[in-house]
Length: 273
Ligand code: URA
Image (cartoon, rainbow, N blue to C red; front, side, top):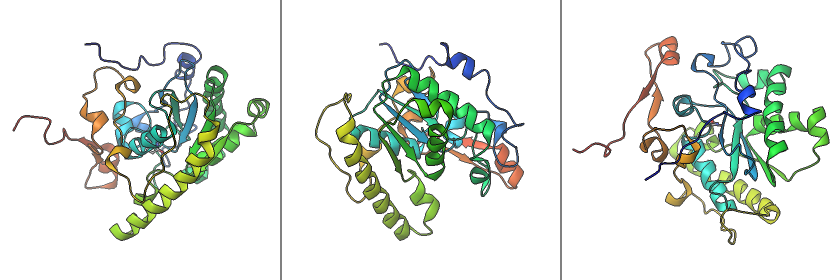
C-alpha cells in the first residue's frame, strides 16, 4: 500500500524561498530558538489550497517533524478546517519561522521589515498559485502579519479576500492558571471560532467535503482533534507523530539545558506490552 507523504520544496518558487530564509542576523537568538532551525509551512503548495491559515510560531513538535502546526494547536486547527469542509486543500504558514523565546519576543519583532518581507514572499507565492477563498489568522501576531501583507505593495494589488482574525488555538493553555479557568477559556475560544466559521462558510466555494456547517459546543470533543494527514509530513515519520496530541517536551535543569533539549517519547500502547 502506498503511504502518502509531502514531497517537500522541490518546485519554484518554494525551492528558492527555502534556500533564502533569514538566519540569526534577522531573528536574534535572544528572542527566537534559531538553534532548532526554521519551519516553513504545512499543506498544499501545488496550487490546490483554498484556505490559508496563519499561525504564530513553531513549538517542539514542529521542530521535530519540520512542518508547522502539528502539535496540540495544529490538531485543533485541523478540526477547525474540518468544520469548514477541508480535509486536504489548505495551507498553513506561521508568523515567525522560528519558535519565539521568552516574553515579548514576538511583539518586539512583529514589525521587523526583513521578517515581514520574507513572510510576504511566502504569502505572495501561495496566493499567486492557489485559488484561496479565505484567510484565517490565529492570534494577534498572525493578524498583524496579515495586515503587514495587506499594506505591502504586492498585498495591496491582490485585492481583498475574506479574512477572519480568530483566537489562537492554545490561548486557553497560555492564559489560564487553573483547570476551571482553562475550561472557561476553551468555551470562549470555541464561541469565537463559531463566529469565524459562520462568517467564512458562505464564502467557501469548493470545500473538500460539502455539507452544512456544524458549530462547536462548549468544549473540544474527540472528533475536534483529527490526526494530521500523512500527506502533510515528510516521508517515513511514524504514525503516532500525527495521531497523538503531545509526544515531545522541552526538558532541562537549567534554562540553557532546557533550551537545548527536546525529549520525545513513543506513546504508551504503540509497543506491545
Ligand atoms: N505551532 C505552530 O506551528 N504554530 C502555532 O501558532 C502554534 C504551534
